[in-house]
Length: 218
Ligand SMILES: *[C@@H]1O[C@H](CO)[C@@H](O)[C@H](O)[C@H]1NC(C)=O
Ligand SMILES: *[C@@H]1O[C@H](CO)[C@@H](O)[C@H](O)[C@H]1NC(C)=O
Ligand SMILES: *[C@@H]1O[C@H](CO)[C@@H](O)[C@H](O)[C@H]1NC(C)=O
Image (cartoon, rainbow, N blue to C red):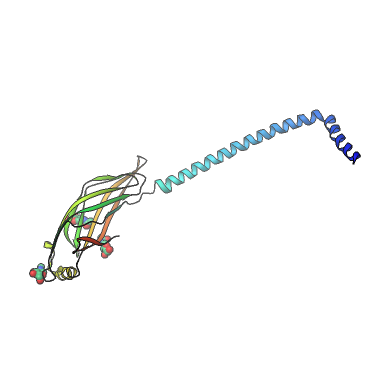
């Protein structure tokens, strides 16, 4: 026990006495080298991280920012303010309402579009129009357009007579709204792309409530 302790105490002393200077010198240069190596490593990691950051940024830019998507152009639910309609035997309708038209722009830049019209049709025949003035849907937002619409069956050809008659006997009027918005998307103030947004919605109006029963857009 005692001898072991002595030996343990003695040995390190001799080591440090005998090789003190050279050990410290080599330790110093080793430390310096280690510090240099660490510094180099830090730089390397820093540069790699920077390159990765740049690549990710470029990818994000190309895949997200520069991905031009056609804005969504559609009509949303509304209630008819004035509605007159005939019978199955004498089918007709005329109505007026404010059509809530929406241009949803999911791009990272504004969508500027020219003036256009939305055509309302019954059985493929136009029964009225909504005027869309030229405008702009800001980036990542929905432009709301409230358009006054007046529709009349007066111009329908005789072959839609029976369709309208049975439609009215069911208490509905099935309309279609079609339109096209042509405009330009600008991203980062300089990257531009022309896009066309199509609208093709089917609106079923319930004559008893004057409300939209079903609405679907392509
Ligand atoms: C449609 O039907 C009504 C009632 O039967 C009739 O008076 C009208 O003339 C028809 N219209 C056409 C264009 O045939
Ligand atoms: C709407 O109708 C007008 C004519 O009144 C036509 O020039 C235009 O192409 C139509 N738009 C669509 C999308 O069908
Ligand atoms: C609009 O949609 C209807 C059905 O939802 C389809 O039959 C029709 O062909 C479409 N029209 C256009 C111009 O895409």
